[in-house]
Length: 162
Image (cartoon, rainbow, N blue to C red; front, side):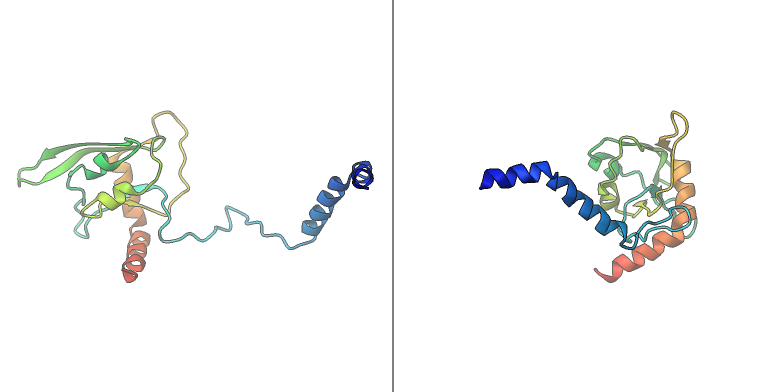
């Protein structure tokens, strides 16, 4: 009996009919497509997108060149060079992140004692030429200045739940 049932299913292409039934069921259901440039999906305040550097409200960069983010990076994507200033503080002269190496894990953000490096919600970045994947200090500070209102709002939401 089992042989006849198996033979009948293979003759009638039963699996194909089941697949077509599933296709037809979803064919007439409402679509959930998002039209990307016009509509954007909501992102969590904890979303990790492009890494940016922040400044203090006075305009001075936050990074104190402690190199904790460079040490904790599992992909070795961060390169930092620093120098001492006349007032005795240490600041970065070079802060580079290789976006191709970066795995966006957020360890650098957690290791930073002064909240200088932050993973923003910005995801619409691309590279057209070789070498653009190295995000320099100037680029990350400019993006941080541009995205500071959103970053501050995300930090305020995050601090509510601590």
